[in-house]
Length: 388
Image (cartoon, rainbow, N blue to C red):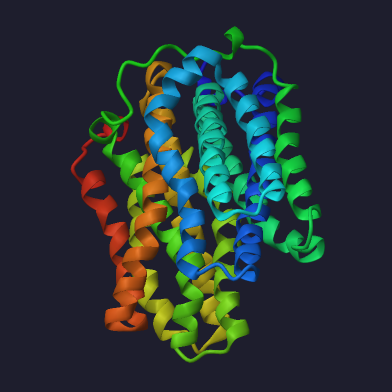
């Protein structure tokens, strides 16, 4: 029977839907804890540099733990690794409230990065392993949407929860630990183990340059936009409320467009979709700049731009599932997450430095140039299946 005619059966739904829901809960908890810790440290009078380092520690932990995660997942199994990651993360989030010493917060954020990396990598490897090929794009798009929506909802909820006392920490910890509950509904599939890896994580940088680059560009651009686009708006002499709206519209586009991107990716060659996303991401940047005074037009452009930037993550994860078998899925997923995290670190540094030297257009120049890294990797391949 032709696999393309098969529906997304209940069996696949039972294996995939709980994991996607769990990832959304993890995203919601992170969306709560990241702004919460920043605001609390600011209220305590901690310097901006020390505050920023607190956020960077999480990324550093993901980068350090990444090479060891495939062996961990192979030993524990994907589902057990996800469960361990969410439970441990919940404990570490709650511990932030127990001690307000800065060094202790650094330590807890580092442990959070390790535990978060466990769930992050194992869930994405699981989704790629269990998703049927004919609908992988839609499934990855749904995962990206649910994850991003959770992340975006966190700061909104924090406005109602508040930042005072133990309550926000307890709620964030419960949400994180509660991400374990959907995983209990996943039926056992060969004990949830993926085969032992053939390649090391760092080898995947050369084995899978397309996915690596997509992950890097995604982390690079998303973090730049979230952290620096409001500053670009203010330095372009627009009102504060409008400057913040730029990020909101971009974020909505990022998660709202991914199911559509995934749907297209199931029907069109990967290379074609990748080239379209890259070109749109480059061309739209100067259009945003020249239309900044036209609120409606700039909002439409920012929505499309957010969708294109978010598509790099969707396409990178989809590429891993298309190209690699189970023996390499955990290593490829670890590499992809590490590349994204590295982009998160490098993006704000390069964007802020360029804006400092060249003004607001310097930031846009960096943002418009980054997607160009993707083009030669796609153009040098002749066949869709060979796009690594």
